[in-house]
Length: 142
Image 1: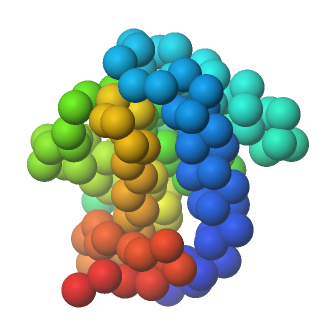
Image 2: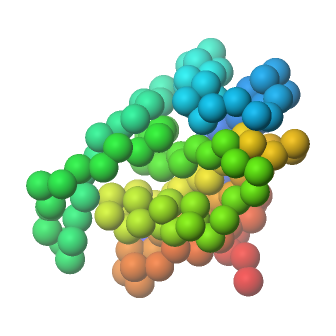
């Protein structure tokens, strides 16, 4: 089983960088503007990341020919960015599908579209093929 607590510091830094971007730009811009700005903010913090990263997908342990492009990847963390008034279940489902297909252990859903930045943390439990919400301490919620 993955030790999700080990991701606490890097997740904190990613969300902190997103807060800096949101504080600087405000809400109401296109997702692509926030993505590029977050990419640069993370690089300025010394955090390597890749925008629009093409990643392998798996089905029942088999590598698929189909690839996905994830908004941002930081190490083995999937970062899904949005610029919408309010996050919806379909946004979470998209992140969960990315986590299941790529087997990345951590997913972040960050929304720049609201007046206040929204950030949600999720764990992918490969053994159960399940995504679960994490709190700011990287502990399971509910």
